[in-house]
Length: 68
Image (cartoon, rainbow, N blue to C red; front, side):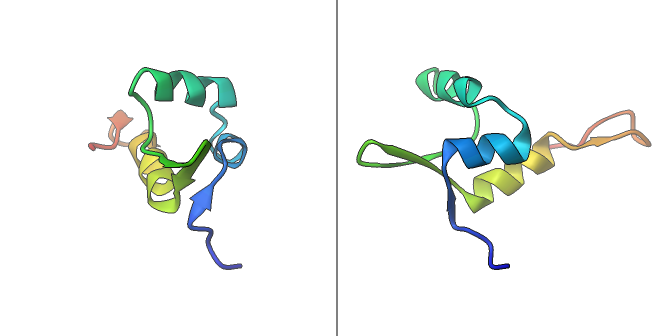
């Protein structure tokens, strides 16, 4: 399956487990993953999804999260 370029907040939420409400709160507070505004639409680039997952990956062998 081809990877998507942009994800709806609901799709980002489903993949990451972060509630849509939290994503909205982050956007309003200039926090959270990067996003794209297309008119009134909000979309998350595939690169932002990958970075979010990488930044929140825990390595038990190292005892902490991966470095950003």
